[in-house]
Length: 56
Image (tube, rainbow, N blue to C red):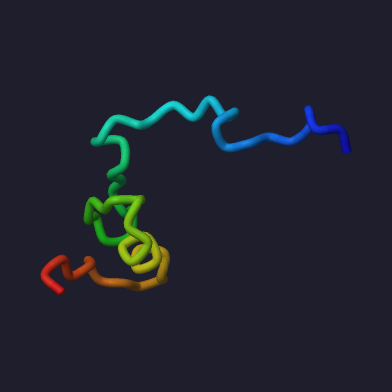
């Protein structure tokens, strides 16, 4: 494989999202959550879940 086929992270043109674009509303429970938070994202991926407890 030639070296010019290797894509390094700095080669990506990943445009950053605005802060509010990191939040989505869960269609199941209606709670907005941060997609960057793995715990919140996994919680909202479960069927039949309640809103995520942000106090814990």
